[in-house]
Length: 96
Image (cartoon, rainbow, N blue to C red):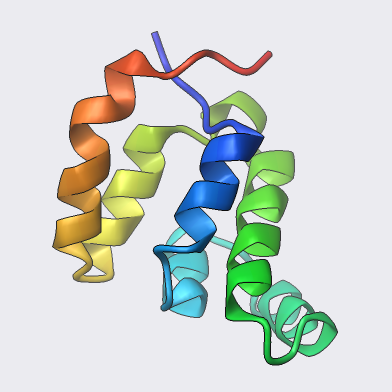
């Protein structure tokens, strides 16, 4: 069973992920889309992060899981945040 990220959790995560562009690349978001988010929400890092997570969810649907996000965080060397999310993977509601 795979657990997808919810909007409330995406908002919460947007406060914790400062290096959103690095994460976006590991989540296979295209550079043009990253640049668009950066331009549209210039100076608002939390909103940029939130928009990146929303885009990822729209692109991947039910494949936008905590497991995939944790993997991207680890690839980006953000192990503390990855560790924080890992125990919660099995406790999230499935988004249909």
